[in-house]
Length: 448
Image (tube, rainbow, N blue to C red; front, side, top):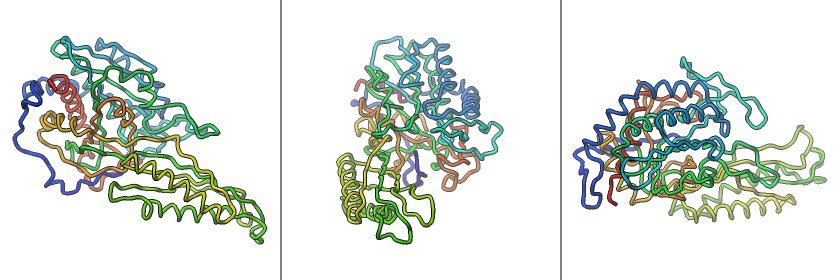
């Protein structure tokens, strides 16, 4: 659920130079010695991470169907001596690593699901899998990098498990299903059971957790560079469904019918004014897109109804609520003006804004810069969405992007997430694992 990232003014934004690792505000934070231990442990499992990533990539599973992946993860965590919970929020897995010293509780998260996308990468481990998606058999591909996320977190888990005696607190490793969306169709009222991060939260995955970290790979940042921002990072997302109901008839005599095709066309155009004329976009940007129109069966028959499907993207909850009201009022009024009716529904996808708290962002940056050798940059807002935001509603959470374009590829032109050609540089797997491990240890060690 991500759009292509733009590395605007990369050279000017790239953070470099010396780092202040310890301050009075963040005493006992991760230092260079601690990072060296993490780096050595992560490098020791680098080959395993590549093998895990390729195995998962060759065996992708759709949202809510991550049975094989969950088993692989659970068995790995059990071998590391962790307390392991399975079936959390569906197929989710939670591993609990209790350090040898008392302290806080921090969580690290990776998503496990793949997409209904045909793979065209020609990789030797390219997916040939097909699965059932909403009643149809479809090709399946890890076109969003979740295979890499799982491999990175498995690697971080093994590295940190070897350091448990020195850890002052507890680390939860959260492997989440169904980030890409609802694994089932909505009922007649547009409702679906909780899924993904929300379902895991409802089943206690974040109990006692005081902070949570997560990352997302992208081919559209330079290799090894972490992109982040404080405050709104990724948009909230709401599915839009509009049923325009008219009265069918013969195309030769539309005056004897109420044409929902014309009404629906006017609704589509009218909705463009919600952002351009009805919302105060000086506060935050917003996007409304209608991506699907279905209606009618024959050229000379006016149908009874037309269905519009779309998406709303917002970066502010107040603006989101205002947009939902404006979309409903605009669609209903325009349809009514031609004698038709519009029934507007939102969901089942309704992800909040992914927003990084300023305090956690500031406190986490020294460790993040240390773990990347200073290769961090502030990036623009991303209008794609992430249900990591559901975790952020429960505990302070920090989410960031890791650049991993394929070797030799221009990150400005590399196929983006959700493309049938999407691929990553596997040399960045240790970077991802190292940043996750460093952030967790740094959080546990900080006195504030």
